[in-house]
Length: 182
Image 1 (tube, one colour):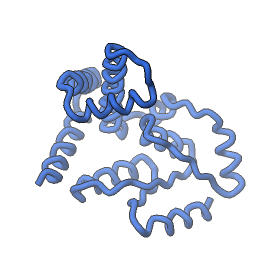
Image 2 (cartoon, helix red, strand yellow; image 1 turned 180 degrees about the vertical axis):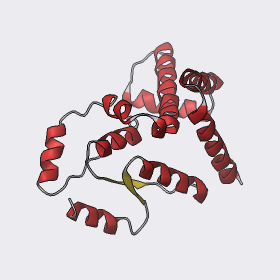
Image 3 (tube, rainbow, N blue to C red; image 1 turned 90 degrees about the horizontal axis):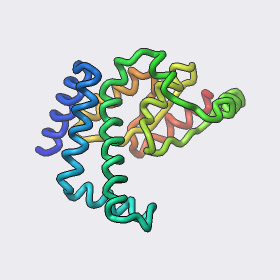
Image 4 (spheres, rainbow, N blue to C red; image 1 turned 135 degrees about the vertical axis):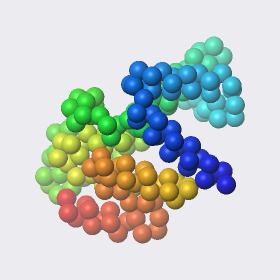
């Protein structure tokens, strides 16, 4: 039941965010970040424990400020994600910096490339940029629940020019086929 509720909430938030004026959409997500951060729930507490492992020695005030900035970044990611398919091609391409693009293109001309994009930014944005530059993108997505939400994310990423494969036992076959195709 929770999965169904989460799916409905994501879909409603996605639809609403796409049609809000840009300033209002980003302001709303900024307020959500502050609200989540101020509540100091389990997720924020765990986030700060994780940050402490990679940033030992921060004072409590410094840690709280870092986690607040992290929440704002995370919520901006979601606002961008919900609005990205309505952005112009120019905006998508001009707001991504690809360091070493020539290396990627050289590898592609030699038959194909595999790029790892950790969750350190909006990889949907990066994937859309690469696809708009004429580079075919195949990616793997974790199966979300409910299935309807997973399908919505698949369709969204496909609309950005990516071939998306669900992370399951059969994922290696289409990925090997894609790499052979260059």
